[in-house]
Length: 390
Image 1: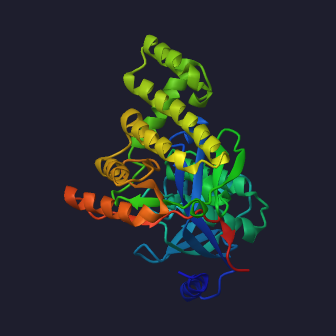
Image 2: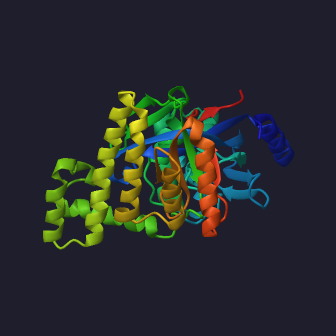
Image 3: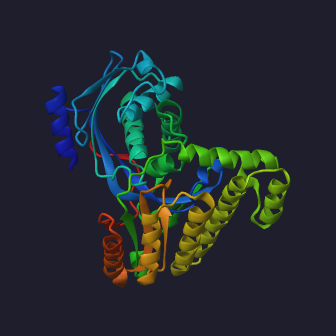
């Protein structure tokens, strides 16, 4: 939907034109999965799919939110009363409400707002639809209330909203990607200190393409499975006496795993530890390959990463595994699940001239397995959050 249409719908809903329209994208993660809550390395890129928000300020402590994509009318919440506290606002409205809560908790005088939102980011697909909603809300309120926050600060506040208000223990990667990514680049991010580097990622110039395959299997992080992985990783770090698994060197992994076994840590904790340490190493390998211009060699690293997510972290599913096996059998350079897992999406690195054939093979494999048809589209590195109208 165009920004003008979002603004017009805002005026129909609220009786006056909005003060502006803002956008924030979803993302796919090229490499670096389940490393962000371990202080590790990630490399996401923003998608052209985005959430648009038409917003105006209020001064009475009321937050009103409306979504063009979700049935129901305007949801009205009392910002002055902090919406009853964390985890009290249910449903999709908890995400913008949580952003207001996080901003106010950080000492910023946000006195309420009217929002109308629409999004082309597929929900439940592991493409950060919730982060795009949080970040677009944070950016709009930052602009309107003159808070002067950086993109990184907005991302961190958005993460706090999701962790503490909504109750999902996500890392910071999704919000950082939505807030900070640059068009034509992947974002190399150190999630410990939030140091970042924009890495050129012009696949078309190399005759390559990156496909996203949305399996349409519902992606849920609030059911405890994600939290269990995080808790297992934290247990591994505690047992090894390090702040986070990021601090376990790749060449020290065998000794670390032996120590965990000697300390009586479960095979599950050891497997989670192995995934995080090897995944951080894979991010660094991909950075080296991209810096050297050897983009095709990234493919096998993606496939290797999928095996680790499938076997060690156990966050894949039959549909995601089928994307990887059918795509690579059809000539893809590499493929892996992306996002938190338990459904959602996979990415596939292809020669541009084979993209259609690979997509066809994956779709046919799904049909043969009796699965619903996947949604396949290109991942085009796009711009992070920004104001659309002035």
